[in-house]
Structure formats: C-alpha cells, structure tokens
Length: 71
Image (cartoon, rainbow, N blue to C red):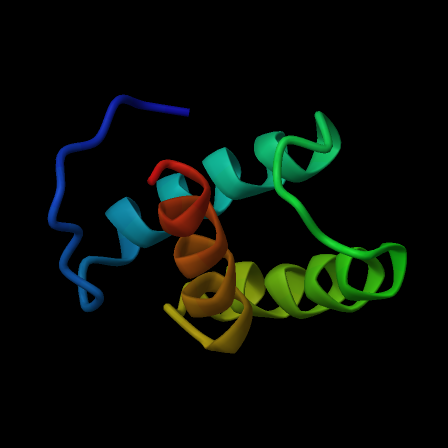
C-alpha cells in the first residue's frame, strides 16, 4: 500500500486500488463499526470492487463509514 492524498479521483485506478488495500486493512483490524453481517457482505463486495479496480458500492460505503467514524 502506498501513501495517498485526498481527494482520490475515482477514475484513477491505481489510487482506487491503493484505497482498496487500506480498506481491507481496516476491515482486517476491525477498525470500522460494522455488524458481522455487514462486514461479511462488504468484504465480498469490496473484493469485487478490487477486481474491477472500481470505486463501487462497497468502496463508497466503507469510505463513508470511515469518514463518519472520524467525526
């Protein structure tokens, strides 16, 4: 994982893939407040976002959860 700067351009596949790595790390450390069911679903969907190198639903949702936890 490389350092990244915000805002992340959602069409920059390298930056989005790097963001996916950070989100997977946060999920593995259980650093985000999610139910067990949400965690399982979002991990699976994030894997799909990663494979597509897209800023998809799971990426959007997890960034929002992270942002809200920082307030």
